[in-house]
Length: 224
Image: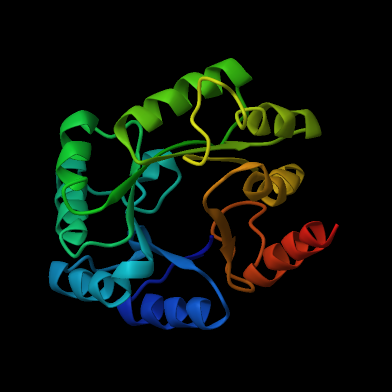
């Protein structure tokens, strides 16, 4: 499945972009709530409810590259309220406070992606594998994303696929940045259940491909 990440300052902006993403052929939309200037629960729940069956809800904190700068207690409260609308997935960071308790509560309503992002480097494959195992121990899916500074970094992150200590079909692992683009293309081929893309001119993370570009590359590979 290809998920299109959408951001906005207003709920109406996210709604408009999510509709466009699905109309263009996205399988899922990632509703990035962390850049909204007003996090009113009534509006948020209406947004999530509207796209629930095809939505990944994310409220990424600033300490993991997101736009949310409020308290952790309030962030978790908002996430849990959004999860009560039963979206397809909620994305929760591996470093979330009281992750075990929070993840257990969220999984009563939705499937959970537990994620880890490193915007500075790509650690060793073994270090990444350890984080992936932790993500998968709390979530239905795990997501490991790092910053690539060389082609060899792609080998480390893509090396997570096919490891005997990591289950097939439950891990998304790829690298950010210009030198990580190849990992975004190869990850769904190697077994990632979800690949992330963006709308034209709406890159949410460094090196993110548009929906059209990612689908085009994948079609080329499938033809061979």
